[in-house]
Length: 358
Image (cartoon, rainbow, N blue to C red; front, side):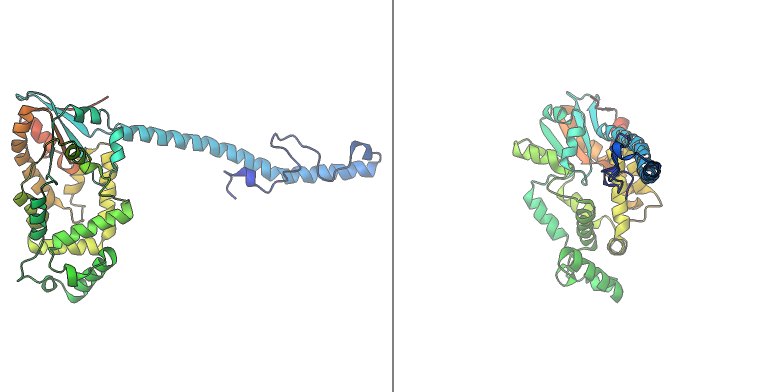
C-alpha cells in the first residue's frame, strides 16, 4: 500500500480516531470492570498490544506528512514550469526599414494544439491589427494542391523495388500496410519522400496525438480564409514541389524512407525534443538540433542548409508585405531560429525584430 493513501491502511479504524488520541478499544472492559489486579493486568496488556498495532499506522501517517511536503514542492515545480511554458517567446514584432506599419511573425509547431495560442501573449490582438496572412504555402490554392499530388508520383520508368534489397522492400511494404492500410502494390508509384512523410505523420498521430485539424500551424490561415482575409504563400507551386519531393537526390529519399521504417522511435524522439524546445521558446536550440551531427533522423543537416538558403529568398519576398505593414506571418519554428534563421536574416536586412510581451 502506498504511504500516500493512509485512509486505506489496515489500521484499526474502530480503535483509534485520526487525532491520535486512543479511544475505547474494541472489547475493552468498562471502568467498572477494573476491580481486581488480573483485570488491570489484562487491560495493560491490551493497551500495550493496541499501541503496538497502532504504531505502523502512526509511522505511515508521519511518512504521509513528509510525502505531502514533497508533493507540495513537486506541485510548485510544475507551477513554475507551467509559467515558463505560458510565457514561451514565439511571437515577434517586425518594424523599421521603411515599413508603413508593424507586422508580426509567429513561430508555429504542427504538433501543438491550437489551444496553445491562448497562452501566447497578445497573439489574437496582433492578428487583429493585421489585414493579411503570410504562410509558407497557401493551402486554399486547389489547383496547386492537385499539381502537388501529381508531382508526388514517380516516373513510369522508375520502379521502387529496384532501389531496395528484397527484405528491405518487404519491410517497407509491411510498415505501409500496418500504418496506412495500403502496401506498395497501391503506393509503389509514390516518391519515397512522400511515403516517408505519410508514415511520419501517422507516427505523430499515434505516438504524439497529432491532429491535423487542430494544429496551431494552420490556425490563423483557416481563420483568415473564413473571414475572407487575403492569404499569401511565400513559395510557389514549383518551389513547394521541390521542397517536398525533389530537394534530395533520389537515393537519399530511399534512405530517408528506410530510416523512418527502421527507426521510428528516433523520428518521434526528435519531434518530442523539438516540441519541448518550442514550448519554452528555444528557437535557436531547435535549429541547432536539426543541423547537429548527432541527428540521425530523416530531417538532416542537408535540410538545414536548404532552409538557410530559402530563408534568404523569403526575406526578399517578404519585403513588399513588410513595407506595406500589417502582415501576420506564420511559419514553422525550425525556420526562424539560429544564425541562419529567418529572424536573424530579417535583422541583417535592416528590420527591427522584437519579441511581443504582455
